[in-house]
Length: 489
Image (cartoon, rainbow, N blue to C red; front, side, top):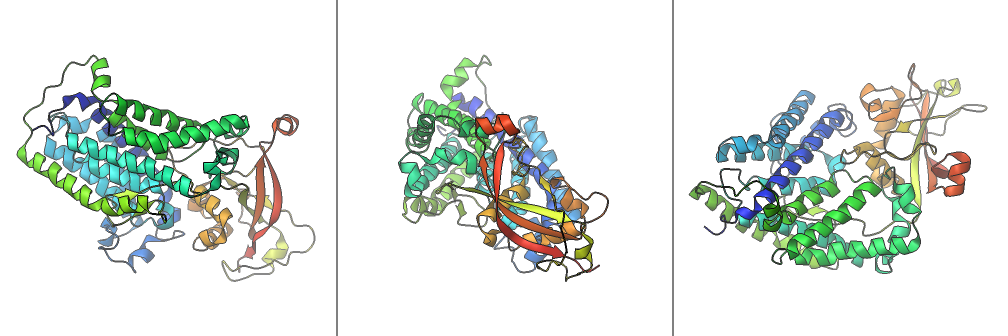
């Protein structure tokens, strides 16, 4: 059948499957390392509490059958092992049905995590990974020719991802239309990387060119994805270049890398495959049941695409939304508005005995009663800005979930009300699980008597300030974010 006859896309399928498996592996390792303090039975937003008030039909997850921290760890590590096997090519060394089952297992395990992840998993790249992972189930393996219909569904996903992001920018902040957003973005983005300081100090004409190139990549190139080769491959290659620019200028977990992997499925089409000296693949006849499943998938995606497509064309376009609990076909977008000023929540603690004498209810907010000068010590986070002399680090595609939520907390306390009091309460106990999420604990020997959070305005230093002080940031105190919190001892 013509839907399976185009063997020129074997390279695109190979690169997509291997890249997707690598990103699945990173996602499961991230979950295994961070779930206990964030989502565990005694976490900041415990999964059992969520399961008690939700139904399986609303949030499909294996954890509705049973939840424990051991069960979560088992799911995360099983997903990691299965992803590693797919990355090593196990899917091509087993029968087609077994390979599909392995891809489906990885998808179901990660869906189970995302659907109980609450605000820690409320990111567009989570649903993007699930949607791409569901399509991967139907891509087949070395036993079958690449199913062209599924490859076109990958293009449709890439189109919605990029075009939706482009539209939400043009409908949103004026700076996208006057090409000035990149004057601010490198400094105010959620988690700057080691080169963000340098990108921020590029000449303004370069920033305008960056913004214009972004519009080409997100509003023009996606349309060309549906053109014949080599035009579609060239459009995908341009997307890869722009995504690599984002990779080196910031930390966006696996969003950029997954976009690149999707683009490679287009870019590595017949013209690129002919450049690889691997001979022409020979495939067995495609099973009828597999053809039927691919056709059913295509119809399903077409039906479920109605609401995302309508949302994309709406003046009230939603950003990063799912319309059904399996996250099969979603809508995407990013940075409809760009902040002009960077704020950071800095968490501090003290061992001042005056606070110990003024015990309060655990987790309650207060103003503290310490007398005289109180020495406050700052907690260090792994990725978000804190110490002004610490150069920003590169963490993506690994996802530092707490650091990202701290960025949202600085935008508005409404983003932090559900979990920040619990975080401060855990710090008063020197909770080992929570402290493993941090870079530095100023109280390794005994817990603090009080903790607080303060809001600072951060800006990148200029070249002169960097040479004179060694500081990458300059910060100015805005005021208290959370007044000192103490515990009854």
